[in-house]
Length: 135
Image (cartoon, rainbow, N blue to C red; front, side):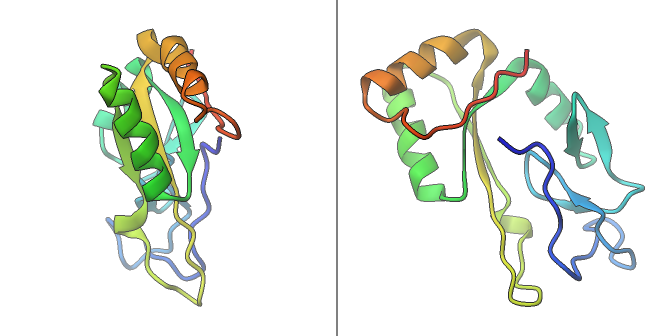
C-alpha cells in the first residue's frame, strides 16, 4: 500500500496553481507543493486536517486503482455492519501529458480492522488485497 504518490508531470499545486506539485496527498490525491505538503505517520498529506484524524483512528483495508472494485469491497463490509470510508484521487486527476494515475483507498476503524479482514477472507474477497493497519 502506497502512502506517497508522485504527481503527474506538469501537475500544479491545488492551493498554489503557480507552483508545481511536489507530491499528492496519500489519502485523497490532492496535488500539493512542498509548502503545502504535510508529513504525518509516514504519509504525505494535504492541508485537510481531517486526514490526520482519519489516520489516527482508521486504517487502510483496501488500496486499488479501481473505484468499482473498492465499492464492491466496501458494500460487502457495510452489509456485515462495518463502517467504511472511501477516498479517491479521481477529483484531482487530469490528463497531463497522457498520464493518468488514480488510486482509491478504503478505510475501516482500527478497532474493526482484523475482524473486517476475516469477513473479506470468508467472502473470498481477500486475495490480492494489500492492507495496512496504521498501528
